Length: 361
Image 1 (cartoon, rainbow, N blue to C red):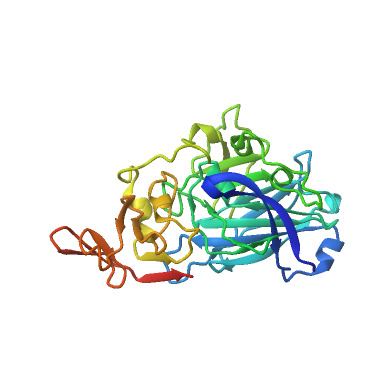
Image 2 (cartoon, rainbow, N blue to C red; image 1 turned 180 degrees about the vertical axis):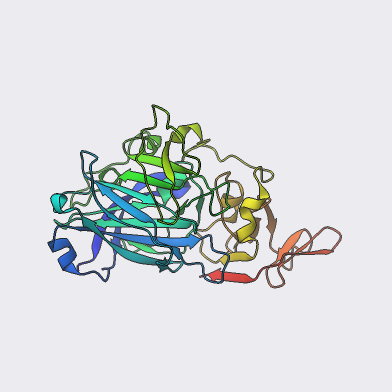
């Protein structure tokens, strides 16, 4: 199968949306899946919310719809189907017998109890049309986000690491601040394939977050009558529990979009228990694309504590507070990466306990 060449929207310098041409290497899929009129979705996973040693997570449940919004195929989620952190999985989407060879222009993903942070989607239709979406869009739209260490290669051979967007069931996963359970995208709006540069980012990037380009969902355990303005379909992300997926008006929750001033948060304003699954993990990155300051000044970032060696800065994701790294010039009120302690102004040490320390290079 040939390499996938995609034009997709990304957040480039200064968090301004722009169009990036991306090469993705071929996936290990059978061509006959497409020949039989089905489609394929490749999912890049940045992180997951598991407290175990592995940061891999379960693959979301997937449904696809045609341009008339009629469901034409699906791939059920499974709690036993795992993909590793920083890896991808190729999911065959089998179309209904009456809808083979139809274009699956709408893609819906529903997360499960083990929330996952999606870095990218790459979709291939039966006619070999290939489309893509980056997790940058979730950050733009106010969803929970984090850095990813998953590379995509741009046309000029530069390596780009997209942000990742969290989805999962906030009830079962005990993460009350997890913003969305899933989303549906009209994938042609996020980057068509073409030899000509005939696709431009909208003048108002916030329109990318609105229906019909995107629909955001939350899962409610108690069955309720959806409001008239929220005609979301029923979705069962995983078979072990009956849940209802409701559409969410995204701009009721978004405080800023890319290009707007960053909102500085002096302290974590939510429930500290929402970060409890990450308290044993910390990630340190040597990549200049990864910013501790950006994580700590965002009200929507979510994930493990983070160190940017480029910025020489530690971000406590529970408190949303930064400390400089200790060095020969800074010996107090700083974070020591080697011992994982915070040295305060009186030269006393406050221990930060981590069972899993990960370095991204």
